[in-house]
Length: 305
Image (cartoon, rainbow, N blue to C red; front, top):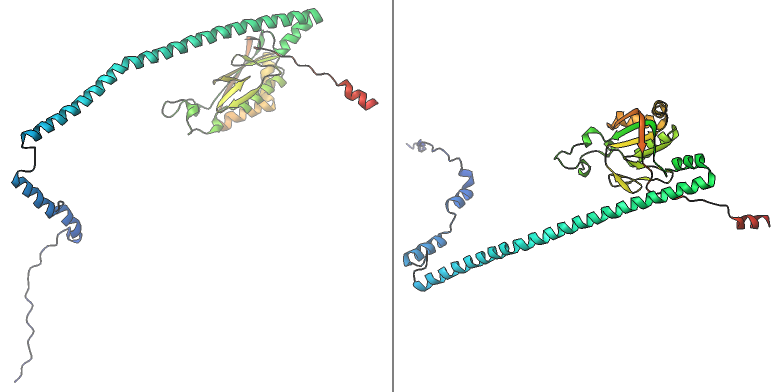
C-alpha cells in the first residue's frame, strides 16, 4: 500500500530582531572600516619595523630641529618688521591728519575772505542803487532781490522726513538704508512746491536752513540730498518767510501747495508744522548776479525794411 509522501513539518525557529541600520549596510561598512585594510597593514608594518613616528637617527633629529628653528626665525623676523614699521605707519597717518587740518583751516580762511568780499560787493551795489534811483526804491529792490538781510514778522515752517526714516534699523544713517520707501522722505519737488506756495501766498523773503532764496535760486536733488544753490541741506528743513504772519500762514494752508503738504502728512507720514512769528531774521544771499535783456534792434530794422 502506497502511502502519500508526507511533507516534512516546518520547524519553528525563533526570529531574530532586525537591526535598525540593516537597510544601510553600505554606509555602515564605510563607517566601520574608514581606513582601507591595505593602509592599515602598511601602517602596522612600518610601526613594527620602527619606521613610523619621530626620527630615530641623530641626523634626522638635527634636521627636524633646524626646520623648527628656521620656521620660528621667520615668524620672529616678520613680527619684528611689523613692529618696526608700526611707528612709520603711525607717523604717516598723523602727517595726513595734520595736512587735512591745515588745508581745512586754509579753506575756512578763504571762505571768510570770500564772505567779506561779498559783503563789500553788496555794499557797493546798494550804494550804486541809491545813487541811481533814490533810497526808498533802492532798499525795496535790494530786499526783493535778496541782496540785503531782512527782518520782520512772518511764518516758520518746519518740514521733516517721516518718523520711520529718522532712525535706521542698525543705527546707521537712515538715508543710506534701502529698506525705507522713498515716499516717506522729503524730496526736492516737495520743497519746490512749499517755497512756491509761500511766494504765492504773499511772502516777501524766504530762506531754507539759513540759505536765502532769490529769483535765481535753484532747489535740486543729488541722490537723497536736497541742494539749494548747490549747497546740501540736512533735515529737518526750516523754512522762514517774512510777511504778514497770521495771514501768510492761513493763506498758505488753504492754497493748493499747502493742501499738497497736508496730503504728504496724511498719506506718507511726513512731518510739518507752521507757526506765525513776531520777528524773523533772514541773511542776505551769498551773491546776486543781475542779468538784463534788451530787444535786438537789428531784427526790428530787418522787419521794417
